Image 1 (spheres, rainbow, N blue to C red):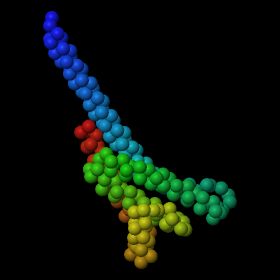
Image 2 (image 1 turned 30 degrees about the vertical axis):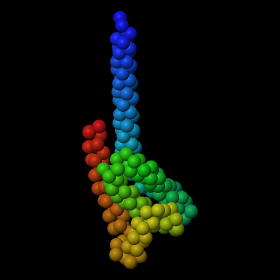
Image 3 (image 1 turned 180 degrees about the vertical axis):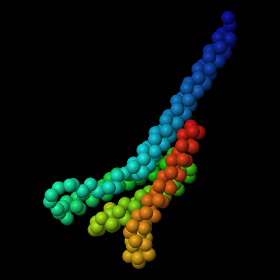
Image 4 (image 1 turned 60 degrees about the vertical axis):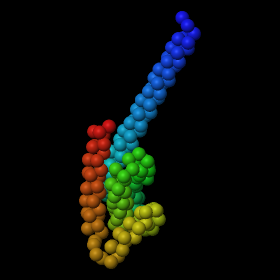
Length: 187
């Protein structure tokens, strides 16, 4: 055998090995990207379910004694806290959608966050919470001011606003669930 044939064969084998390594790395990266998208979509669905299934009933203990105002406030605060849990997850979801799905889901997530913030705020006001504006920051401030203006001007009652934002929240979550389902079907 001549030396040039051996060098050519070893160069060809090295090239094939490099191509196989590149292919394996590319496949692994594709799998990681898909798994990340699936995890984010699962987080979005869990977030939407937590919004849709939050229990808003106020459990009034059945006793012979009358409930004190302090006890009533504590119970209402617990109910509002149940709303704040999905709200706390909202910024994580917003960031993940912006980095992974960009314009595909971004406006829908923003609509849900705005509706959820408005609903939580109106619920807080209805339960008599004071200084509840301090709990909201960033873009939610504009929404809080708009809802406050509507309540103060008497254009709509608190119950009408609650119904309006509850309906909007259900509509927006349904739209986003359908879009997430379509993305999952394409993966």
